[in-house]
Image 1: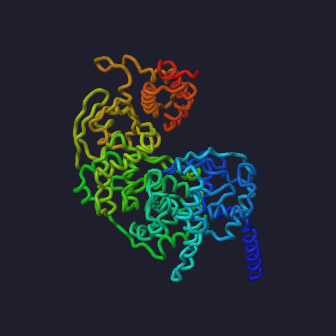
Image 2: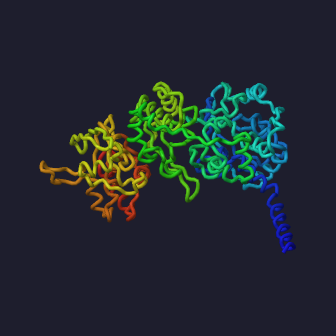
Image 3: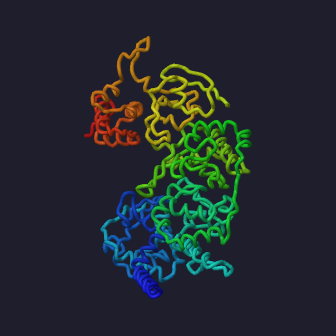
Length: 408
Length: 180
C-alpha cells in the first residue's frame, strides 16, 4: 500500500508540475488581474479591446491585447510588455493611467513573464478600437509624463510588515498588485490619482459606490471569512450581494482563483482578524421613528425583500436584515439602488441575479430618504440620518450622467 | 391586524376602503374588488402574468407587477386591469373587445389563457409608448421582443402572440416610422 501511495503522490506531483507551464500560470494570473473585463467590449471577442471607459476627462477605449502584429501587441518583446505593464510606457508613448500600471508596478518579474507567455500565444485578432475622445489638455499624451512625475512612483514598494501572517502577505500582493482592487475602491484626487492615504476607503464610480473595504468597515458590517468566500465565488451571501462591475469581477476573476489565494485575499481584507457576530435588528424602534418609511417599505419592497427584511433567495431578493449595504457608513448605494434599480445579471446557466426596478419616477427625495432611514435604522443600527437634500444631490448626479430614465 | 386606508381609481371607478397593511395588490383586486382576471403566476415577480396598467402623472402608461407590490403602492393612482380593456355597455355587458384582445383571439395566441391578461396589459403599455415615440419599421420586431420578453407563456404561444402584436401595431396609424 505505501508503495502505491508514493506512486500516486509522484503522479500528482507530475500533474501539478505540468499544469504550471508559463502559459498556464499566465492564464491564471490574467484571470487574477481581470484583464478581460476592460479589454473586451460588450458582446465582443475577448481581449480585442474597444470597451469605452468613461473618465471625467472624456472616454478612453481599451486596446487590443491579442498578439496581432498590426493592431495588437504582436511586436512586443518581453521588455516592451514589462514597460507597459509596470511603467505605463508603450512603444508609442505613455499609457493613460486607466491602465492600472499604478498597481501593476508591484507585480513581480516572474509573473510578468508568465503573463507575457500567455498573451503571446492567444489567437491574434486584427481589430482597432475607436479613437479616444478626451478633452484638452488630457488629449495630449505629453502631459502624462508630468502626471507620472507627480503621482506615480514605481520605486515605492509594497509595505510588508513583519508581524503579519504569510497568508496576509500573499493577500497583500494579490489585492494591491494584480488584483488592482484599489483602482476602484480608493478615492481619487482632482487629477484622478489614487489618494493613497485613504486607500480602500471607497469611491463613487459610474454612479455606484465602490465600497469601503478597509478591515474596520468589513468587521463593522460583520463579514465572516465564510461569507466573504461565498461572496467571491458566487457573488451573493447572507451578508450582501454583488452587482454591476463587481459582479463581473466575480464572473471573470475571483471565482477562478484557487481556494488558497481567496483565503489569502480574505485574510488580508480582514487584516488577520475576525468579525464579531453582529445583530442590529431594531424593527420596532425604526417603525415608530419612520412610519412613512415603513409604509413605503411594505408597499414597494416587502413583496420581494420580505415583511421583516428576510428576502426570498439570495440571488433573487437578498435579505435587508444583516445586509452589509444597509450597515455601510455611506448610504450612497441604498439611495442609488432605489432610484435606478439593478439590471439582471447572469453568472452561469444555473445562477443568475434577478433585476430590481428603479423607483425614481414614483418616489420623491423626502420619501426615499425616509425609506432609507427606516431600513438603516431597522437593520443597520444607523446612527446618522439621510436627508432629502442628500437624496436630491445623488438623484441629480445620476440623472446628469444618464443613469436614470432608462427603460425599467 | 393593522389596516391601512387605500383609495384609487380602478378601470375608471373610484374605490376606497381599509385593508390589512400587508395586502398585495393582486389580493386586493381579487379578494376586495372581485376582479379575478388578474392572475397569480409565479408569485415572485418573474412571470409577469399579474401585471396591470398604471397611469403615470403625465398620462403615460407603465405595466406593474401586482404579486410583489403592496396595495399601498397604488394609493391615489389610476390603474387598468384586463376587465377594463373591452368597451362595456351601461349594464356592464361587453360591447366590443379591444383591438389587442381581438388580435390575440384571431391568431389563437393563447391556449390555457393564464398569461393572457398580462400580455394584453403589457401590449397596451407598448402601444401607448409607440404613440408617443414611434419606432422605425426595421426596429419594430426588436421593440416588441424587448417590451414583452419578460412575459412567460408555458403553453409557448410566443410566436402567435408576437404575430398578433405586430399586426395590431402595423394596422394602427402613427406607431411606426417608415424607413427611407
